[in-house]
Length: 75
Image 1 (cartoon, rainbow, N blue to C red):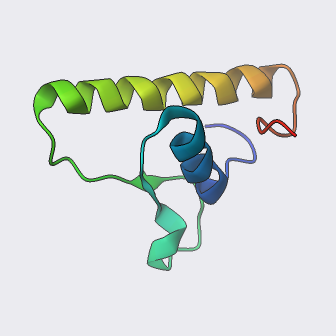
Image 2 (cartoon, rainbow, N blue to C red):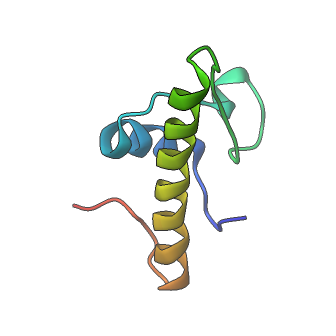
């Protein structure tokens, strides 16, 4: 788990930085902000590409967390 993970911030960063659209899990009236929802309609190759993009942003978040950064969003 990443400390201070915010599903809405992650969804926006994912769209802006990796051009992948997901829905923040908290948009579905749940109390926690540690997940997103996705739709798996594209073909297998497209889904694999999308998961690679998601992984790369999560890696960026993890690196920032290790470095003690409070936010991965640039000003």
